[in-house]
Length: 181
Length: 202
Image (cartoon, rainbow over all chains, first blue to last red; front, side, top):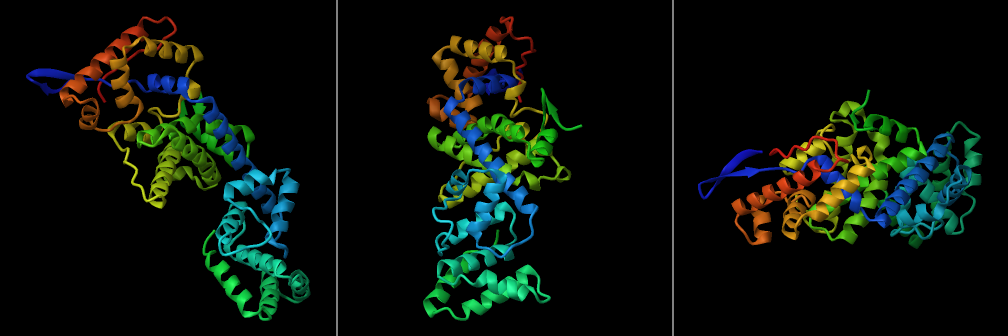
């Protein structure tokens, strides 16, 4: 201890609790339920990391986001419910302006690029709106020199040109929510 | 060789998380979550909310470990705490709440310097933890109160501590020093404690 300052003319000494004593006190009183909860939070991150690892092994494929996520979960033996709950996703199939940001965050965490995410959401929206031919169209275009993403975008452009105004407006609102992943 | 603290090698922990070793994810939560919670409690957050947010930080930070680069300086432990502080600030901004900045001398020395303390729970012996808890229980309510405020809730300023206790700053310092001395005396007399107990001023 050292004299720190004067208090009424009397030197005031100041001390500090050693870090290990403080940690011991904290360790002795961290609630068990909090420990369990944090363990579960860590295991959730582990599951998401495994989904990401599976994604890294695969090339981009022209299927809606829901199929991608379910497929990766199956391959990685990951239970999807806690993952979807973490991202606040109730419906993986049908993107809306409200859910688009959450779906994009999930896709981004799994390892999709922004361009891929936007295409996956466009595919999901097309499928949910009854336009199920996008993957086939993309496959047809893919027979040319286009890569998968280019073929996907070309097919989606072709389909979306047929959208009525309200669907086009809704898709625009969805994509405005997806500016980064 | 990575940063070592007790039996914890934080660089090795980061590497194991990057390699998707399940045990490393669990170790991260065990090592860091209590101090996340302690930080949030120190920001005057209610315990239930601090627990919620600390668990959220565990997932969020683990998901970003792949971005950690040792060359960024400070080491993994410092990176984790900086990430946590940034997330706490973002969270406060989204909630339109201003979390007090916990950047006292103690805070910066403990969290910025990877070798000075922090998430050291695993380096403690269960006997030591028990001894410290028993010593704590032997203190008076007055002693525990001042130590709790100053050392466990990260109250950064003596003026705030004094205000909370309704006493002068000098009196608060004296009360703290005496409480610390009593705690040290109890611990020094305990055969389970083999460490040197220094209570020098920071």
